[in-house]
Amino acid sequence: MMKYYIFGLALVCCVACTSGNSDTTTTETDTNTTTEISKADALLSKYIPVKLTADVSHLSDKQKDMVRILIDAADRMNELFWYEAYGDKADLMENVKDEKLQKFIHINYGPWDRLDGNAAFIDGVGEKPTGANYYPRDMTKEEFEAADLADKSSLYTFLRRNEAGELMTVPYHVQFKEQVTKVSDLLRQAADLAEDAGLKKYLSLRADAMLNDDYQPSDMAWMDMKTNPIDIVIGPIETYEDQLFGYKAAHEGYVLLKDMDWSARLEKYAAFLPNLQEGIPAPDAYKQEKPGSDADLNAYDVVYYAGDCNAGSKTIAINLPNDEEVQLQKGARRLQLKNTMRAKFDKILVPISKVLIDESQRKHITFDAFFGNTMFHEVAHGLGIKNTINGKGTVRESLKEHASALEEGKADILGLYMVQQLHAKGEIEGDMKDYYTTFMAGIFRSVRFGASSAHGKANMIRFNFFEEAGAFTRDAETGVYTVDYEKLEASTNALSEIILTLQGDGDYAGVAKLVAEKGKIGTQLQADLDRLQEEGIPVDIIFEQGVEVLGL
Image 1 (spheres, one colour):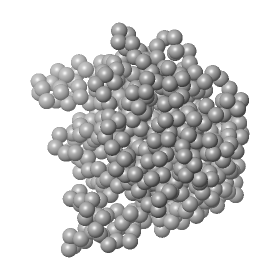
Image 2: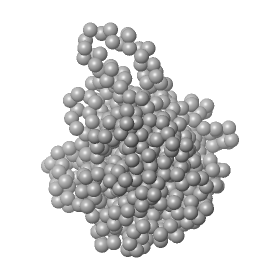
Image 3: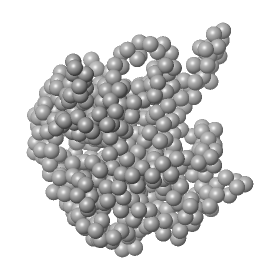
């Protein structure tokens, strides 16, 4: 029987009870052992355990069976992502004896700390390859560019060497034949139980895609389904793990229960997208594409994370599909993961604000603003431009490994622009100061994800840009920050134009310069982030999750 707990209960003890264990663990005379255990405790303290649960009492017996099957399918993404992120997991784990370090390895899907710029925390492993395990470690960018391989830039191929040492491609469905065949079977079993016609079609097509790496038909079907109370996002999806080119997609799986009432309240916002696109603070040439207005905004409770989305910092909202053709035809679906979002707000963002935000502005840190900023971040992925205006192809292709960080930066800044516009129209309630102040506190939360995270880089760039523009001030005595609301609004418009221009021009050199100059943490900011660590504020969350937690 497959075990669905992801180290949750064990980590509760490791993170919350280390002081109780320290007397027994530190009586060893071997100083190396003592150092390693202390190091492991410090690493694990970056995360706080959260029970990932939801109300399943309204589900039918068939639906409960389906959730169990979908969790099984999603769980199998862990093995595939381990291979993509590192390689041979068994060999690594065999050589690490300390149980706490083993747990931290599992959190990171490898021996590199995802919240510390992928710094190695196991001796002798070396630096993490920027291309993860998608490419041969000795391959250069020049060798890749010169290789005459039609599918070398495909989202769904590995680069390997043949017997002659030449580069060759291996499709995902070939590399993972045994695993994806089982996943495909499980998705078909779930499809047989599906009571919603749209969900049945999507699951069937996704099962096909697992076997041939043709995901567009299932992406189209996923956008067409509207009334399903159960959902699964599964397969090779995001390209963050490939920091060499940003070409290769990583396997992940989410199992989701849709909150039908919350989702109904969010439906109206998609209709504003075309009008908001016209008002983006950028020259007309950079906003000629028309975003789909039939896109969905929905709220969900997540009941399972696996693979890429479960590595290091956890996702609280999703914007999919990534396929530009699907986006232009169907729009996109923005999934707000409200149970995870609430956990991060309560356990991380509020404590951060008590340390770094001026007391006079702390009343403006609200969950509604956090939810709104997060939601419109995802909606804003649909604004702007997907294809360059000068024939360089898609923005993603042109900007390569920098595409993800710039896209996340665009979504953050245009998301706040959307809040501004909709608030002015009376479509969003609350004080704009809530959204601005919560946005500022959110920078401190996300910048802690580090330089290995696209979201972390985006927040570093924004913090430095805002600092130069005077969008906030820092009190030298108390070390707290105060937002200048007028300058913050002006700064968001200025940064929006810079980002959209870089994307539309496919300006790889310009983006590289922006990342190099502003995508870093300065001495003062690092000192303030260290204060958060000293206060014991976790960087992110880990899950106790699975069928037993759900009572299934």
